Image 1 (cartoon, rainbow, N blue to C red):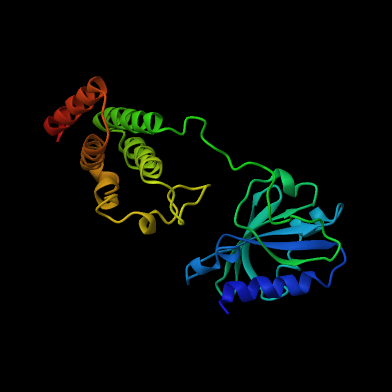
Image 2: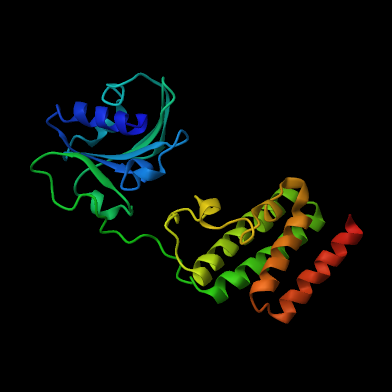
Length: 255
């Protein structure tokens, strides 16, 4: 058994001995998609506790340390923490009551342990996964183009970090969204983070990330690579296309 699965089983076995706990839900690679587990996986989970017991589990770590000492932790949300075990396992969790759970968006959960009288349907979220209301090819194409346009202006002004965020982050997010919309869903997609597992979803000849995300000092090359990719695959509006080409031309003089 993978050590992540062993750790969550150990936690669940300890929590099952307490009368104010309700269930343990594994998420991510500790959830329904356990085939994704590797040596770099984290332990993501929800601990469901009885009404009135929540803050005892949020504020104290004795239950978390039952299988292994915790050497580092901090509160990353009002209801949860991130923690590093002595043996190197990194955990991220939320403590929720049964009444709170339906309001939390999540997917791919697995019931590791539940009390016999726990509510049914714990692994299914009633809250919709957040969706972009403008999730269309037209929106993602033009958002990526305008990110390139704004990023090139920032680069020419000397604001290289801000430019990198527009050119190498936001515009590339648009590219990933365009691939999803034009080529269909993949089993690797994370509904909460489009960058997760994208290298497995699309080969380099389809999504040349090394050219699109070359680093802080290469914003101009990144903008060219992404712009050329967009022009090859989608009908780019002539006005914004010419504006971007003009900035790329100015950047040749700037360099």
